[in-house]
Picture (cartoon, helix red, strand yellow):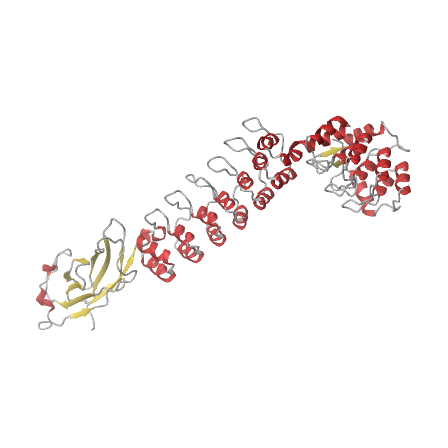
Length: 550
């Protein structure tokens, strides 16, 4: 026999270190003798650092006794000199004591006479295999900061599950997850998550791990946290949520991940700004595009000033952002809490280059449609851009040609407007004039050099439109001006027939026009010019969004 006492659960004793608490661990001794009691004595080689209770005693046959090993930290320190494994050693003496009375397990040194352990009298067994491993919050914090993967795992595995070691915090209230994120260590984050800490646990400042990872742009860590069902919304005590923090740092990939996992695109910061407000404020056009593609509300007002994203872009003089928001359909007529539109904000800040996009351009198109030459002149003098486009992509010339305002058309051409400018579907002013049956305007345009062979995005020429609508006079003008006579394409004919069968056509501005509305437009146009045969005004073809009279 080589020993009388076995050590349980092993010879490695985890001693928990916690600030302001007794640092201790437990070791269970089992008497392996079936019939005889065993006496024991345990001694620490470094007696100033350890107190053991009880230090000696008697254990009945096949019985156990649990010892408490208390560690005393070095003065002024919250950590042992060496950790997690200690070099400190212990000696465990044991001897068979037939007929000995078993005393209280809490007995002290005097419970067993010291001469029992002298080899002169009895056979004494000595075990020097007891080892100490330090665990606890300060130990784990230090190991995570140092990035010691193997030792972190050892400490977590040796810690009692009831301690929730993976949820440990440092003295500043940062959890182990927060520390690993600050160290840019997704491997440590993954290791910690294996031990199931609270994934949404907040730091002392109120920041969740996901918020910390989003702010740092740690894409892989964000992915790991989201896989553990981390909350994508703002913590109650946080000022900004994950999507706001990702956006603030310009972390586009993190923002994409959050939105894919269901983050609310219009969620507000504590002070009442949505992510789109912040994207505009930070001049992050790529983030703004991503938010808009995920359904962000264009006209959402913030809490403080009632500003929409367009107000903010106008105040900053951010021309590209203004154009993006308008292209996506932002309402430029909304007034903030001070009663100001985006145009008013731009004017207040002196951003004159935005005047056309925010107000004058639309006003110029409206005046052109109505034939108000004086108004057009005044708008151009006040800074309206002659080749500017309205919110739907049309220039003033498109509008004037469609409505047949020949004096306006002549004036705009004389002032240098681009006669062949195309809208988003590839329509030129000549396409518009032909579409609406404006013979005189068509003739003026071709005389001024309009491209009679211009094609829409669907490869349709003005002549094809004229022939399909049986405009004999316009057809003659176009051919005389050099247009190549080609029959309508099969695709053109099929599309027109399909739209006519549907009894309505799509307007270029996102609403559906019924057959009655199309007929009313036709009657308005036919007051000025009657076609050779009875007809109803047909939709534009080759254009994903046909023209409309506004």
